[in-house]
Amino acid sequence: MAGHSKWNNIKNKKGKEDAKRGKVFTKIARSIIVAVREGGADPDYNAALKTAIEMAKAENMPNDNIDRAIKKGAGDVGADNYEEVMYEGYGPEGTAVMVACLTDNRNRTAPEVRHAFDKYGGNLGQNGSVSFLFQRKGLLLIDGEGLDEEEVMMEALDAGAEDFSAEEGTFEVTTTIEDFSKVRDALKSGGYSFLKAELYYLPSNYNAIMDPANIVNMTKLIDALEDNDDVQSVYHNWDMPEDLE
Image (cartoon, rainbow, N blue to C red; front, side, top):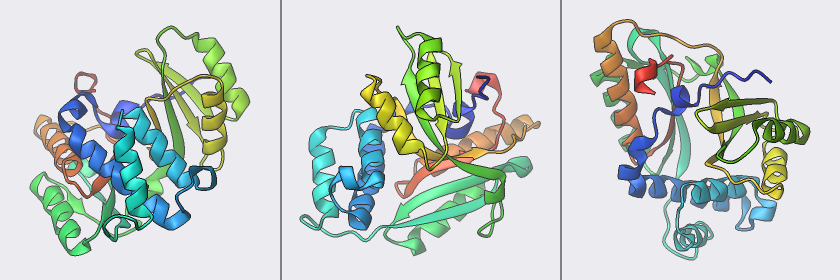
């Protein structure tokens, strides 16, 4: 099945994450806390929590950290009232950007996000200004080393996957939101582990940035947003040059 592989475009290059491991764990812990508060502490009955735990394990987050976040979400330890907020805007040359946040203080987060857009040649927009350019999907990333691509593809499609692609030794399985849990669980039962297992926003089309200075600014904008503790994910429709992926 001819998949359009744009994982690097969506999430930016992840080699930098090793240096940000603590930040990654903090962000995932927030996701777990919110999931528990909204749906309970049992992942068998809380799909959002199950997804957050899968994400934590894919990032090699210690089990103690996961358990601590679950307990905190259940109200046993501390109390932080996080809420989900999505900011939308444009980067250089009209590139669409969506910024998913979990924050306990909108009055802190909004100005910080706006400042990043302003500083690097973009502008923060209103709700709905760019979200129509994205589709909400499920994504499963599988390390393809030692695996047969055809076999994995057939198992993924049989489980209900919407699309499949392979790039640089990684298999990317795309699902609808409704089928995400079913496909994830089927592949996990088949012995596969995931580098990523999450819901994300897939651009409907991609935007090239032509000016080298704007390419630098767009890269800095993404980095500045991802470096913010309140920001969970940054999605964009930038058609990144291959040497940046």
